Image 1 (tube, helix red, strand yellow):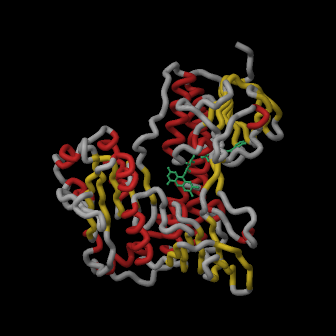
Image 2 (cartoon, rainbow, N blue to C red):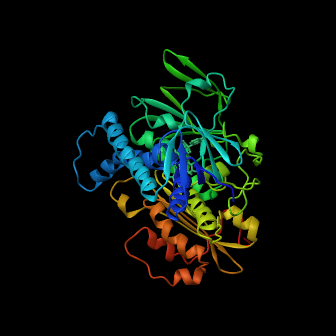
Length: 460
Ligand code: FAD
């Protein structure tokens, strides 16, 4: 084998890259990782982690209201955005430091700068020169997508900037209907910002179960978020009153901040993929096989840049599977079936498996179990909040193929449900599990009556 500077060169120190680099280095391989920004990647610096802190911060408004129902006297709560930002940034810096130390302790070398491949064994890092590597792993993640030619589009920010706003706006317009859009809508609304969500589709969270989507929209509106569906930006105008979002359907919305959360795209710019002949998919993602191999020998890719399931734990498991295969002699491919996910909207969602519509399409006859109820926590508040729990069952095999929870602790509940569902649990086995009382989750194992969706009749 030819002599290279490194056995493995990883481009990108995010969720997938760090896991692969650490494991490979721990096998005794000589590993380098290039990072152009901060170690930790999207998840730690401008994604899951700061987002969850913002969700926590914003939920207090609701807790204060709930507390009143239980007899608490809560004065006029105030929120200090700069204090929160400083605390958040301190914790993010600490976590990024942990990632750096973990890489170093494993023996991987960290190189700061933007990396570019110049041939299938050579990587050039801006300002640091070129090195060679036996294997290259692309783990460069994704970036926010925004329309390039929208008049006034330059006035909008992306999720990246939403984490660092110099001050909390009085009014915000959020464009998008994906999980990032609904999460930010809940965050800003909770922090007292007048929040409007503009989405061009018929409902938010495309790909999720339709009952979940409808339920979340209703609940968001109950909490004061203005949701405009079937609407989309035509232009943004900067005026003395603020930013005016001129929507194609005729709405003109004035706000202090316009946040575009319109989706993300694989981050492949300036990577030198063409020079190496690395093939892309139709969506511009790096094309890989089940073992994360690209079409070019010695080059692999994991995480969001491959646009399979764009979640942190998936990037980590893909990075791990790559390292197991290539550096431990254990061929491993990550199974992308039945990956559970959470949406930290308010109320939050936990979901695993198929939506009802996808199950009907794929399996034909399915049985649905659905319950809508007021969570106990809100019994004294006089509010209209409802939780939703839904099971989708393959009628032929009785296997549970989908589980969806909207309500307090939905994301925590779904992690456990996902284990049983991934193992192929049937509805009778599921029901044989005794309930934990009084909890929201007990409803999951006590639904006995099949639900007939309106319009489907008994034949469904
Ligand atoms: P990343 O973590 O994006 O890491 C890629 C790294 O590569 C970056 O640090 C980047 O700077 C670096 N890089 C790129 N190009 C180069 C180059 N040429 N040279 C050197 N360095 C380079 N997922 C969840 O599971 N749960 C959540 O709750 C969640 N919330 C999210 C909220 C938001 C607002 C966003 C944006 C994302 C969220 N995600 C969440 C998704 C999650 O962050 C990603 O799926 C995950 O970070 C992907 O990991 P990755 O390793 O593929 O890429």
